[in-house]
Image 1 (cartoon, each protein chain N blue to C red):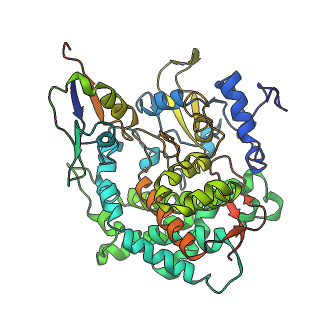
Image 2 (tube, rainbow over the protein chains, first blue to last red):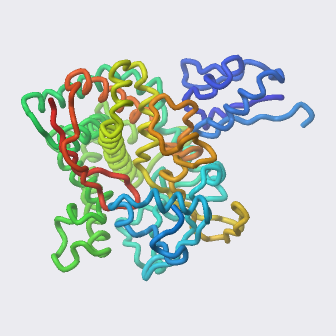
Image 3 (cartoon, helix red, strand yellow):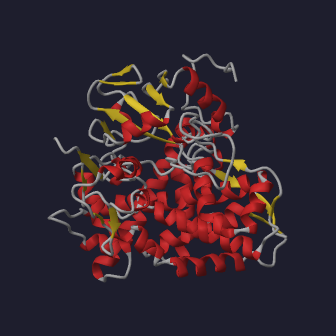
Length: 66
Length: 421
């Protein structure tokens, strides 16, 4: 799967980093960055949780065949 | 509970007394079980609307801000007759909370850098200093009104400083905020004729007075900043520009109004409500005071439990189905946060106050496009306040019943008597 963070929406709340620390990193500019592309399947649960709990709805994921 | 005092087709959540008397949780529980998408009958003056009481439905609405818009006002009560809006105080579409994407995204970007967790946390030492000044003022007392002397003072000071409001005017901002958000409560209807006090007309007039006066106040402040910039948010708004987006003077005044009102009424009630709920659960309170590292988690549980903002309304821009019920284009949906934060499908033992609850994905700040801009401030103010309060007054006790605000919008406490030692 591939994961994207919309920089226009992200405000650095860091919920994604807590849900999937191997996938997301919130940096000094208060934006979350996706560290892996594509994201290995083992992180699916964490990424799905990140998508769900992101306060701004800034995270999107797509499947490899899309 | 198996029955409601009012038949479902007569039930009206615009009635503030339902909340003042603390019956709302019974009603919400009943609605979640029997009619989670419930048509609230129209009133004499107001249109009918859908009461939304389940967590997943509020998530769905919040995640689709183009399908469910905010620019047709965000309160449950909406007049049937559009001419009831008064041009001077009609703020639909004028500030963030009543604005839709794509403009909402751009305007929020003008200010959100000042509200990120990192920016907020940098202010912690200063917020701690303010907190201690507030507590210094009650040091010599035995008893006090916790809302007036403590809970209201911190968020008021933080937002007023941020906006550059001189200290002498803070009580005035407090008073105007009460008029706007406490308008339905006769305690704040201080400047209306006797014959309309306590009526919907009295509430409407009180809210309008508060809005007009606050705008007049900030118009003078704005003129001042245009002459000379200061290190405050108002000056920043004057100069703000992002990808060609700027704010007009009218929008700056509405913005100032929104920030003052939202910044000082909500956290006030989370602090008061927090002390109250901790006092009602002495074993949880002891657990916290024995190990203050549990505070961040306790703050989240206080937010879930209190849900200081009770609802936000949206209007559907197309026909849509929610939980099998057809919502028609143009109809209002009202999302009830105290209800979703006790949704049995999401929270284990939702009626248990548990300061170590995990996970605790409450929606007290909403979610999505309009997620509370000030959430970081609210969390930090709550944390610092309880740290300093319990450090300095470890034996503080609630000493009487809280006096609740008459409102279906703000879950407020007007007065909370406490014994300090």
